[in-house]
Length: 428
Ligand code: HAM
Image (cartoon, rainbow, N blue to C red; front, side):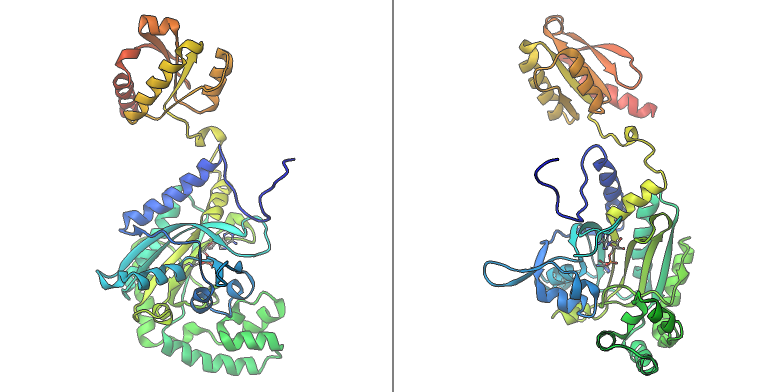
């Protein structure tokens, strides 16, 4: 065993299976780009106060799961547990909301939560997320949900469902809160639970203790308290999703784990993942920007757990074998004998200059070992070049999957090989 091991509970991806991760992440990103979202790249640590204020102190994420430390200047710093607060901080700081609205952004990267690790739940995990800031139209809610949906569909996922609900506007929540607090008075709650409920009464819907879950079945539901405006908005979102052919279930008991949500909220749940079945979730956060000191603009977004989507795709058998996810180069060069190595290195460089993905066997290997390396690399073609080939100016190009060989003029590379790839592509 190696002396060092990765810290407990982090996810890691290495070849060959890292190509699964790459595939999933790229498809999710492509879906966002296709809908006009632009990249925002943010620091992985921020001022601790940003998350306390943005995400909310009643949440498990802030109260129990943050990686918080003091930096060398005595500032309290936290590794980002989620992406929305940081995006809002950056939008406000750099006046992105002063241009055209909505501001549409995507991000991808590591997030950190000190949770109890288990399959699909990590202390460092990956998200692809989007945020649309500055528009309160039901159409944008439907767009955000459809971007996630199309991302999952483009990966080939099938066994997942979409739950949606609405947390209404401030008026709806105030009306609901009055009755909810009255309802809590009929329950025998301990002090800690009462304190959480005082910070955010909706949290109790999310309490995992069976006795609380049982009691909460009788609690008044926010969906029954929606103002006319909130109800009309939510109905429009549902109608749009129906016209987009996106099936969904209205789940009035759904509570998101972060405090900033208002209005439309949603979660994607995959059937093949056991306890950690949430592959993505999001919603509106209409008060967040003002709360963080910016203009009073609305926003909506989602975060998708890339690690969990990889697990979901594996559970659905979307990656049938290692072979299918090998992301090898197009051409693998083997230098026969030490003398030809320099020429092969130059040839390799010219192939890459021409935009052809290529590699060569490094190290002192006999032909057999080098052929093995070519095979392992997942390359589509292999070319062996020795003194004889350099003399004659011709070498054998081998198709690694069919075994078919053809003679190719070394002097015509890289253009002849580029033409061959093009004709192969047309045939596919
Ligand atoms: P979230 O529901 O906390 O939302 O996280 C989004 C997704 O990240 C989850 O559905 C899950 O797939 C994944 N995830 C969360 N925690 C873990 C973990 N410990 N291990 C593996 N995967 C995990 C947010 O983070 C919001 N910022 C989403 C959002 C954006 N809302 C509006 N805009």
